[in-house]
Length: 404
Image (tube, rainbow, N blue to C red):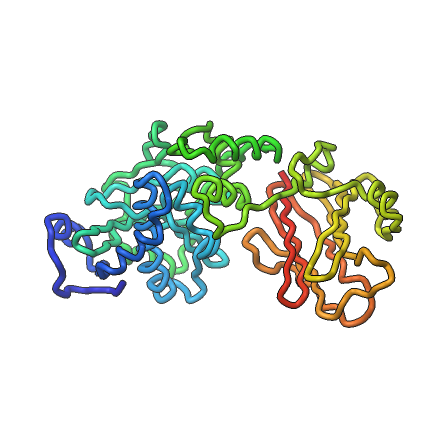
């Protein structure tokens, strides 16, 4: 897609109305752009969801380079470009962020200047954003027009909530149509309260979440976002592993591997993990394998578990110690050890801690001598998600965790 300012374009009544309503910020895209966007989305069902995803692909292609040029070169898709389709398969909206700002584009095919914000983007703490942009798309005329914006605070204060489709709506009089206002506010240094606090959503155990996956993963459930009370839906959707597993169940795609996630809060509550994830109590595994784990004596009020993993030709024990701290915080210590005590960890073996966006949060140092692989020690809060990644050359093993 390319920025077009006053060039000759295909005109339809809708296109003319788009241009009449806009200032001068609109884009033309090619017929092939739409064809490719829909081709990449047509495996999603029902058909309306496929079209919704295609509109969001167009929004991503148009707005990402524009935001990087107008706002900051560090603007990136949220949570990441390869994690957007599971969101598009469930609700409308494409998010962009910098280290301290998030913007959600909401593409629409109607020509009225009405901003519709799905409840997920307004009431899930991890999803709330500073600004919501209305991007109107005329597929026949092959143009897109940025028609206005609002803030999270204004959406919550003045938006009309429709419980039927769980959407906040702002009419033309309630949105700022001149996009330049957004940049003037930023450049002036004026502080704006763009977000307000939202009610925290209740905890959901991993067993309950798995049950909901099985229910909502059925193809006959057309709109899973409307099948559950929002508090339950929103809490599950906020977990990346859950929404990606739901995406895979519903659409039968292997683009994103279904993840088995261990809830460390359940470990401390002594709730058995019903997923076949292979974890065992450290003492039991130590007795069964006749292996002395050096971390077994460090546990006081917490829980220690281990499992056998394989990276390439190397078999290891992955050990995770969890201890409660004040409030909802927990302390975590993780390590890997070859199952054969007579061999040293191979050179090049690494053990990294990844955050919820799968970015390396705390790198492990590559093994250079015959020592234990570097131990990962860190703290986590309720609601956190993370991954422990063991790598050896091109072979990778990942374990996903949450604290709910």
